[in-house]
Amino acid sequence: MLRYITARRLLPLAALAFAGCTSTGEILSVTDPDIINPTDVQSAAGANAVRLGALARLNVATSGGESLFLLGGLFADEWLNGDSFIARQEIDQRVVTSENNFLRDANYALHRARVGAIQAVDLLKQFAPTAPGWQPAEMYFVQAYTEVLLAEHLCSGIVFSDVVHGEDNYGSPMSTTDALNRALAHADSGLRLVTGTTADDNRVKYALQVTKGRILLDLGQYAAAAAAVTGVPTNFQYVMRHSQATNDNQFWAFNNNARRYTLGNGDGGGINFAAAADPRLPSCVGGDAACRAIGVTSATRDDLGRPITVQMLWTTRDASVAIVSGVEARLIEAEAQLQGNNASGALATLNALRAPTGAGSGGVAGLQPLTDAGSAAARVDQLFRERALWLFGTGHRTGDLRRLIRQYGRPATVFPTGTWQAGLGVKSGNYGTDVTLPIPQAEQNNPNVAGKSACLDRNA
Image (cartoon, rainbow, N blue to C red; front, side, top):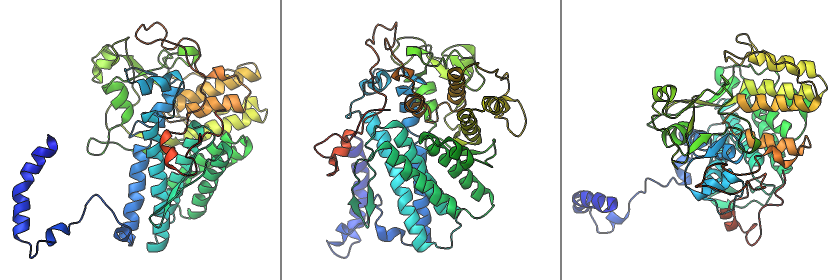
């Protein structure tokens, strides 16, 4: 109907345009504004437009879309499903099929950002060779960041394809380790290009440093990870911005507004995010005074099954989200200290973050100092709880649970287990055994994957 109405409105304009044509064939020679041909970006301005486009796509692939930030938290223990969509339920329950449309869209958004960044690097090199080094370096950051996010969530067998001279260049399934090494190479490529000291130079350099540290942590190279983040200020943030004119903050959209997600609360043995009463993750219950103050008046989730718990980190549709931070750098250093048998140093680093003020502080008031957990295993638990609360919602939790299995020898029960959505009659069953997300079925269009499972294995 909308297309019909639009067409009716355009008919008079079309008639006028036709009357002005000098030949009947001229009306067929139109420019499609939705298609950008390679020739359209072969200039310095065009190269910069592709660069900005890659950053806009990164926004959609992180806090500006239903990305692995949300879906990964649903797969782990940060969120619970609060609606009736089967595809979200299977992610929450950890019985994920490759046909899952939400996973497909999140995967697609990350690859769009990644490929856009690859194209921007080539165009900047060719048409804007005098552009400041931080601009192509930021495009390497986009590549490294999206690649590590995919490696932390998807099974071994990730596929990285590209477009070369307008033609599809299909990749082949790659192991998790190879994917991480690919991301590491891109982080190093970006760091080599940052030679200035401007605010933009430092912003991109610090983002690359923390991303490199994250990759090395995933590879089990703890000392190298700590070295990678040396010099990153604790108050550094690489921010995704939102607005009604561009795209909403999706934590607000899916939790506060649509009530399709609700905060996890120890379900299946996970962390009690909702009940923790931790100032790093303020929350409220739908309809109470605190929730009403931020516009959440409904008392139940979208499925009407039980009360909704709402995060209060991002309380408006235009709230910005830090996807990389100096706090993460300090957490990397603390883990390296713990791995280096320096438990007192690790505790001091964690407590410096919890201090209300100071250069090493995370800037959150109301946190009390930690005490030594007393054993090696308990110290690991303490560290990963600190990571969960400091880095909530930013795509780290699934990767951390996988690392606990892969690097610390923990059982797969670090993921939620037992009865899924316990006590809620409209949903039933048990948590599944998935510890990774599958490669989406859409990858079967790749001739290097067609006819076989893209996953090399589903291990952590």
